Image (cartoon, rainbow, N blue to C red; front, top):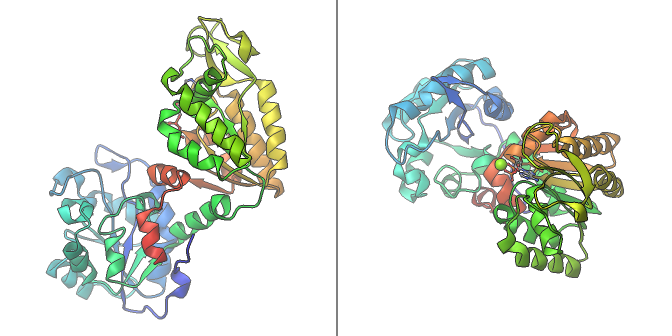
Length: 399
Ligand code: ADP
Ligand code: MG
């Protein structure tokens, strides 16, 4: 990872206009914001800039209006929630560029905050149109990007603005980049990766990238079945992508070459039907799965062995649950390994970073999330980072 500027590099910003890209793509129900996590994530950046006397203009997208105004996707709907989290009055400006924004800037006093309209009401946002970015930049003195979750898109307010204004990472962006850098950039070794979830096909690029980066690749979830099948195991009725067994073999070959140990479960939890605590539930060796059974979780012996692997490691990245954790007792392996990782992190022997929608839910369910070093809530951007891809919004800050 290259170097990027942070708010520590700002000089005196009193009366200067900060254009701040944040994530206000909030879950809503009946016009009400149902989860304010994303506002909380950027509150430190917003309040720090306001505290330093900047006029803070917030830029964000909401939903997919496709380049047209849409009354049901206006950011005016999030103003109450933003005010509540920030504990300050916030102005709404129904434009992102031009004289209306200039007028608002004239009214705002140093330390005041405004939310500009949904950037995706204009086609120039997703097209990363330089003229659009330039028009937004015209009302600002500097740009702060605090939305890692949007950094995998090269849009006008994630990438374009950096061409026209001095640009800085906000505190949330900075924390995310520092945590990810510690996990895969220049990690302390040995490094373990846990990759689970439903399908190999959704995480091929992740697996291929990780074998060259980590010392231990722990494969769980439905995707482990495809790897087991590639090794000649009969996985019965399990979720399995039989057409990808060659690919699984290639990945194991590449791991071998790179000196990465691939860990597959040798005992598993199976059932004949997918339901909570089904009567057919049992634990067996992977070679004993019957034709009418499905593998729904990693077995307890394998979990113990995996815990021993983590004890030898200094760094862990985790994406994807080890089993069908939404249904009991198929959460057991995920919960147990998450608790081990959390305890090792708390002791100071492990740096642990996790991300992915279901992964975050699973780690919360395990009560382990708060003890991880860093939990990324940035879905798509986190996965692209795990694939080793350059994120345009991040690369732009590093230029
Ligand atoms: P994330 O959102 O964290 O990237 P995924 O979406 O890739 O994770 O995978 C999560 C899903 O994988 C969960 O819904 C879970 O039930 C499912 N899953 C895990 N193990 C199995 C399994 N053995 N069989 C079927 N589904 C599984
Ligand atoms: Mg998911």
